[in-house]
Each structure stands twice: as C-alpha cells, then as structure tokens.
Image 1 (cartoon, helix red, strand yellow):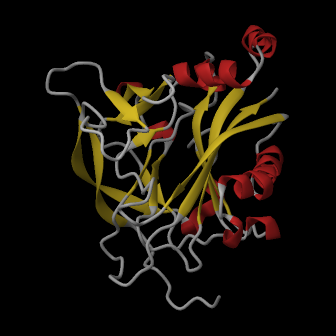
Image 2: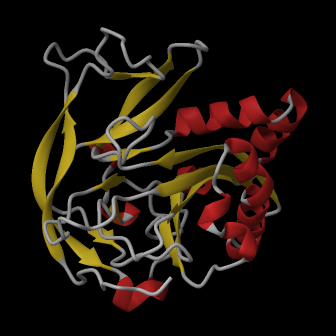
Amino acid sequence: MAITHLPSSGPITAPLNFYSPPPDNSPPYNLADLPPDSPLPPRNYSSSPHKVLITDVRPNLTTFTLNHHSFQLLTSQPPPSSEPSLFTSSDSIKKHYYPEITSLLLSTIPNANKIIIFDHTIRLPSPSAPRTPVQRVHIDQTAASAAQRVRKHLSAEEADEVFAKGTRYRIVNVWRPLNDQPLESFPLAFASSASLRDEEVIPVEHRYTQTGYIGQTAAIAHHPDQEWYYLSGMKNTERILLQCFDSEALKPGSEVKGGRVAHSAFEDPRTRPEAEGRRSIEVRALVFGP
C-alpha cells in the first residue's frame, strides 16, 4: 500500500506515566487476566506523569546495542510470513510468525543457540479490545521472574544445568506494528538501560487470577537522568528488540549495562486526529547461550 502520510519525526517532549507507590506503602501487585466485569482494581499502586524528552533513534539506528542499551532496532524485515494479514489467530501466529522470530533472534543475537518463545500479545486501539497499548513505564520481567521462566519452560534437569554452568539466558521481546501505514498513534518509548538505576526498578507481583501463577514485572520510578528514545514512523517491516532481562548483567565486571529496558506507549502530541490507531504484536522469548 502506498504511504499517504509521513509521521512527525525528531525529538519530542511528552508525558510518561511512572510508578507511584500504594498509599499504605504495601508491596505493589497487578491482578492479571481479570474478567471485564470484575469489581477488583487491577493493581494497588498508581502512576505519576512526568514530561520527558524522547529522542528519535531514526537518524542513528545502528548505534544502539543490547549490551549497553538493552534495545536494538532492526529494519528491512519483510519475509512473506510476516505479512500482517496472517495475524488472524493465535494458531496462525504460532505457525507463521514464531519460526520467523526464532530465526531472527538466532541470527541477530551473538552466540544464541536456543530460543523458547513462551507467549505473544496483540494490542489494538479499540477500548473494548482484550489488550490495548500500555501507557505505564514498566519492564516485563525481573531477575526473579526470568529465573522462574527458565524453570517453567525447561525440564528440571535442563534448568539445573543452566544455573549450575552459569549459561547466559535472556528474555527478549520482539515488538512491531501491524499497521499498513507508518505508525503515528501511541508509539513506543524505551529507555537506555545504562541510564536506569537499580533503585528506580520496583518489582511488582504479577498475579494471574485464573491459573494461580505468580510472576514479577517491574514498575519504574522517574529520574531526570533517564535517557528516553522512540523510533519515528515505524513500519511493519521493522522490529524493536526489547531486552527485559540478561543474566550476564548480574556477573561482576560485566560489560552489560543493567540488561533491562524500561518502556511504555506514549501519546505523541503531533499525532493527527485521523491517524490510524496503533495495532501491534510483541513476542516474548527466552534466549540461551553460551
């Protein structure tokens, strides 16, 4: 489809919603997969908006690395299996898109030798959609929940071997829009991991009400030294790798700067009223080796 409009580009100052603790200072939690008619609030903490400068990475795509920033930008990814028209069901996504993501991660992340994709999410602009763009600054996993994921998706013997040998493992989220036109509405902002302090990362218990599974995500407290970025006019042939955890970051003297990327959808004030709402997919994977 021909591009009919070029979205705004360049740096932008916009509000992002950061962590505000529970009024009683109790440990924060999310209640995941609540039914739509549930009377329970989905979380016991709130958000506080702060205006931040968000820099456009478009002019410098190749300067950002997983080791330093915990995000990486990939352009020109147009294999036929990734056509948005195939994203019609979970089965179709698993059949057509998961193999592409596996190949992409194996070829992009140095020394990766095993990929386990454990879930995906499609986000749609309708308020009634099951999942919509998340406008809270967060990280999908913590060190504790990443280790829990290893034990959940490997056999007990395989997981024991990973931890005993100190095998490097990561959780990487592969993010892309599904819009036909370059993305305008609710683009994704992401912060350089090197600019994020550990004390700004607040573990949040993530409780799945229907299965009883309890994991952890992280909320993010604001600090003016955080460095925020976005990719202007992102096309559906482009990908953002969001590294949510890297075990290498826990080792003394590691060159990995934190190994976790805070991110959030944001409302770009330059978005045209008639712009198409954001449709996107994120696929989460465990990445091992060596």
